[in-house]
Image (cartoon, rainbow, N blue to C red; front, side, top):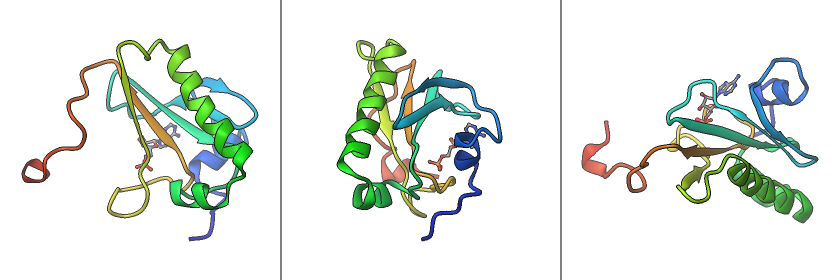
Length: 124
Ligand code: AMP
């Protein structure tokens, strides 16, 4: 899939629409999710144009990958999430219900998150 520069996170990165920023460095921008699913729900996006985790893993430079994941860790530390714990995940593609086609990691925290994904028999 080709990268669409009109996706909402590209617009946020260009400053065309606002975000509730929590962290920024040369490799990444982090901001609060507009529809939080947990008390803390932060999105971390790389500054480069990558559609998804697959695209990022294949095409990003080592410096971009290292910088991005260091930023994820920095955000979690800055928000005081290391000790209580947190979960991060990234949705890729249709089965994962990826909605925004710019690679991003969700950081969920602030409550007991349960274990992993819902068991198959409980999925809606
Ligand atoms: P995903 O399904 O992994 O692509 O998740 C996309 C996420 O982006 C969802 O959790 C949305 O609530 C979130 N989102 C969409 N638009 C915005 C926005 N303008 N600012 C912050 N978060 C957003």
